[in-house]
Amino acid sequence: MASQEDVFKKLVAHCKEYGFVFPSSEIYDGLGAVYDYGQNGVELKNNIKKYWWDSMTLLHENVVGIDAAIFMHPTTWKASGHVDAFNDPLIDNKDSKKRYRADVLIEDLIAKYDEKINKEVEKAAKRFGDSFDVELFKQTNPRVLEHAKKRDEIHERFAKAMNDNDLAELKQIIIDYEVVCPISGTKNWTDVRQFNLMFSTEMGSTAEGAMKVYLRPETAQGIFVNFLNVQKTGRMKVPFGIAQIGKAFRNEIVARQFIFRMREFEQMEMQFFVRPGEELKWFEHWKQFRMRWHQALGFGEKKYRFHDHDKLAHYANAATDIEFEMPFGFKEVEGIHSRTNFDLSQHAKYSGKKIEYFDPELNQSYTPYVIETSIGVDRMFLSVMAAAYTEEQLEGGDSRVVLRIPPVLAPVKACIMPLVKKDGLPEKAREIMDELKFHFHCAYDEKDSIGKRYRRQDAIGTPFCVTVDHDTLNDNCVTVRDRDTMQQTRVAIADLQKMIDEKINMRNLFKEIVK
Ligand code: GAP
Image (cartoon, rainbow, N blue to C red; front, side, top):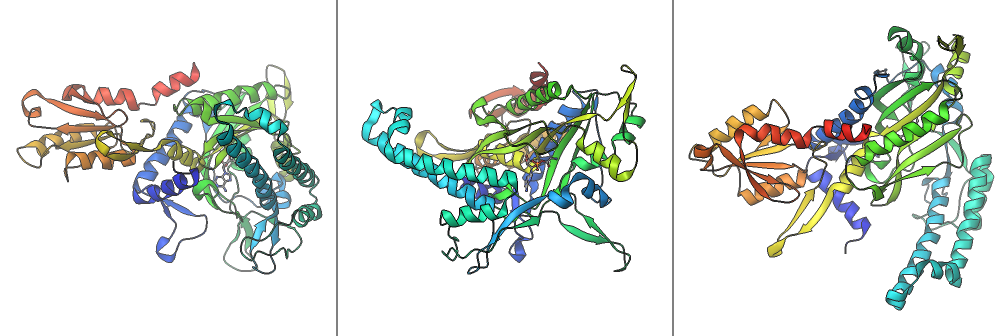
């Protein structure tokens, strides 16, 4: 069986080969952790965004959207804390001159002990066969216990050092556990320093007149600074939410795992403003709502889990991640945070403006508390691709790669194919295409054998292939082949649009989410 690492490599190659994701400016050898979406990728990405946007703004009459600019007044980032505290702890190896995130080096070290434990378990499982009790083995095997003890020791020191912002201790852990640079193989490390993740540039034409501005590292602040604008012009009553989709930029030092950690990425964020004291009730509400949104896609409950934060940011009073099982383990796709009234209060303080809401029911003014849901479009994209990518052995020794993308998100919904390129079949196929194209994204393909055409559509996740054959000209029916079951059914052309719409329309998922 292929290892998860191999599967991931194949997925990355597949994304490129089938027009989903390309390295940025590839003809110049690419740009680290920056990617472009191709013809199929952009369709999938747009569908993900629509699924999110509509689930916020259609299903909630008290959630409205905005589209704020990427550039913001620089004081925004002072107020939000990003100028002073949006940092990663970095360390350089003096021999290779390579730069690493000290926290990532230590996390990798901890993961190595987990790997060692897993290897012991695998070996023992082979030796003992069916009678093997994993939990008992982990609790009693001396080598496993030794590895677990080391791992927990490091973890405890690491968590404390991160909590205390103790950079010297981070370096000491790296020294004590003899972490070596993967390039030079040496332990010749510099001190650990903080490095700000925001990209900056200059706005204005002259050097003296220019102002240092930042490329936003999150979209959320565009919502906070517009709180009063939206509340007043939309006559919004607390509780209400503001949703936004847009680009964010972070100068990530450890850029890896393809589009999981990028320097330019896209976020879908919603800030929900509530009465002080009601925030934990709403936190629970949004936690459950967001999980239902993910699960409605049908990849299976086991693919997701919550990871509640033990260590909270100083302004948060509850936080959880929704993690998805990627080929490289369970990873954060979305964060849900109870951010108190921190952001609005900070903006009030730095701008000198009163940012409050008068609650007519309570007859009182207050600074609303905020529940934030924040999901990365690219990570969501990666989770969909990873769950959808399937290699299948077929009867008769044949094989296929099929993307089992949920039909609502699939880039192309149907491919219309004349069985042969003559006898009036292409004309009939075009006629069908010309009607269906008003309803959803269709492709037309008349090249190669039907089998090859099916494989091409499987590889981009098209849920339906519609074949026009000689009988079609007499009975006005077509053969519809289902991507997942490969079963073929005869369908009247008059019923085709309705039949496909039933499978690809987001309303079915929305009804499931609000149940
Ligand atoms: N406003 C809150 C916020 O930005 P975050 O946990 O830093 O919180 C939210 O980011 C989401 O944005 C993450 O769960 C992830 O999906 C996505 N994200 C963050 N950094 C990313 C990166 N470098 N590349 C791709 N996605 C990223």
